[in-house]
Image 1 (cartoon, one colour):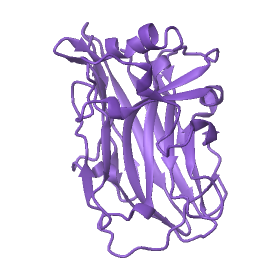
Image 2 (tube, helix red, strand yellow):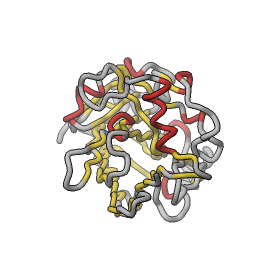
Image 3 (tube, rainbow, N blue to C red):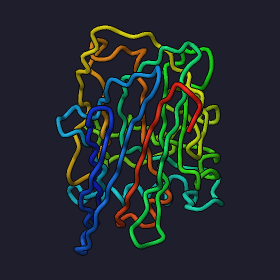
Image 4 (cartoon, helix red, strand yellow):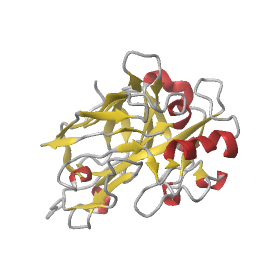
Amino acid sequence: MVIGNRIYIYLLGLTCVASATTITNNDGQSGTASFTSEVGLSGSVALWGASFASDGSADFSLMFGDVSGSSDVAWLKKANTDVFKDQLISGDSRTTTFLFPIASYELCMESNMPTGAFIKAEVSRFEESGAANFVPCYVEVLLNGQASSGSANFLFTNSNDNNLINKTIKRYNENMLNDDGSIDHNTPMSSGDWTENGHSGASYATYQKVAGTSFQAADHYVASSAGIDLERDQTVSPDSINYKLDKTGFKDEGACPSSSRAKVYIYIDLASLLVAPTAAYNGSIKIDFSNANSQ
């Protein structure tokens, strides 16, 4: 079985726009999948750039396929058949929501308001064109925690998936992937590969979980920095055939100071993906920062 959807994100000024590509499996079926990401800003919030343009094409990709006969999908299915037997349930009757990583990147963002800014994320489901299948998407955003109010750790999803985001959250630890971000098919998945903590080190139970598009108080404050050159470092290159986590960041403090970085991690709902892993899905994400709590 070979499946895949490639996701393109284009950085145009301060707006990111996406287009589509092809998804194909071994019986000749194909379709398109697109993923849109935009970043907006207003008032006393400045977004200087994003790291996902590091390879010049401004894209990141999600693929599941075969490597020397070892199927990414077969490996993923063992989460339900071997590791967490029958616990990967696509509906609300689940007790645990399993997040599998798609990509991560950094935003170079400043807010000159000591009390913090506001953030919202419009996260659509990945929906199969012309069918009822869908895959919830989750977006983890970490801010610098230097303001006097608001939250620094967020987990966003679509308003229809409020029940799913409020289950116990388990995240696949991408440190268990190969150095190039691909799946190690020779190493069986284990329960120890999953964690209930986010990238902040805190439990997802303590995160500000948001299912919807309302602005949230954001704990992010940093004075303007001089000499930001936005030099990007591509940690992992996309693969056009097989799964690879696409991970990018800024090269050093001169590129973007650590205190100015907002870290973004994107996940798919693994249980829902495994219902129809060869389908073509379309989804979008828009992250907005503002100096006021308004729509």
